[in-house]
Length: 422
Image (cartoon, rainbow, N blue to C red; front, side):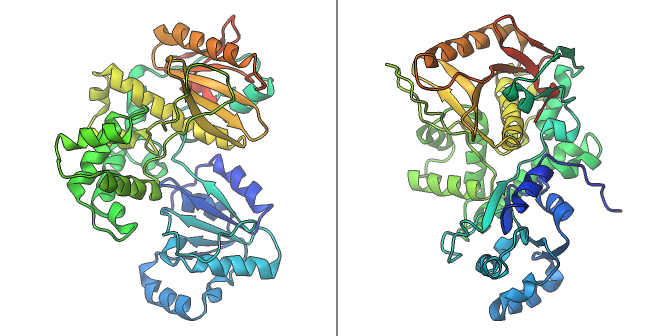
């Protein structure tokens, strides 16, 4: 029985890109739903990982790759990185046809830099796809829209959700893997654990055909998990690993991290660098994050019950959950997610920056007792930009693990992550 497709925010993003470019490349981690989403828009498909056709595809690629591109458009080329030379065939076909919406390519790994002859600029648009947000999985009521907050049309946001703290811990551990939603509640927790084992024992070595020590990969993932949602440096990660494995070098660490990026297991948040005159230097380090908080939970071998026993770790994992969702919602609004922190300690956990120049700072707080501190941070940051050429923020928000959505007297929105949508 075929699993019923659950609508994604990416459906509209994909349609928009297909309407203005010859092909769209959908990239992202395995099991995040790339193929299923592509199939909704495609009129025909070639599944390049089909084991029954491996020999046939190899022969075609060696003789005449264009034969694979004759299906009804948009034609889906699933896991295109299996045969990287098909990229150039797609690019050439787009030039010859002179039409938009010809191809959809999906891939869960980035090929080596020399695998293609041309970049595809102007012909092939990219769409990074991530695991499901809480709104997509049905775990957020979606009473507050990010788009309406930016447009200034968010009204009557006052509402109460009913997500207990125990359920939040479960959502962090479960993750946003679409295929898991059809499983039993307990079985869903096994999905990220199985994923992590595949990464450690197979995927991270296959990406560049360089054998990697599984135990070192495990130690690295565990260290990244301990430092999730922090600005931990490579030196910190290295020292953490060396407590168990003295033999790892800076170069080895870099190669392992690069491999994890190329299979989309880790996706850090870069620093926001506004033109703010300040004696306090802005920190430029990336914030460490996995593609999904459940990966960190699996690396630390935690369960929802264990998460509830350590609220400091829970707070970092909760921030990672919020970051995943905000990335999805920002993407739907032509935006990106950054972070801000200077050496005085002033910070914003996330800065949502839209293509048209609008921006908004977001602080993440698991508990309601920290909301006042978060609001003070946001107001201080707003004051810091008032004397610069930077436009004022469109809004300011504290994203919480609570149950009440409201607008404070100082104008700051307080929104549970289980009541947010794009």
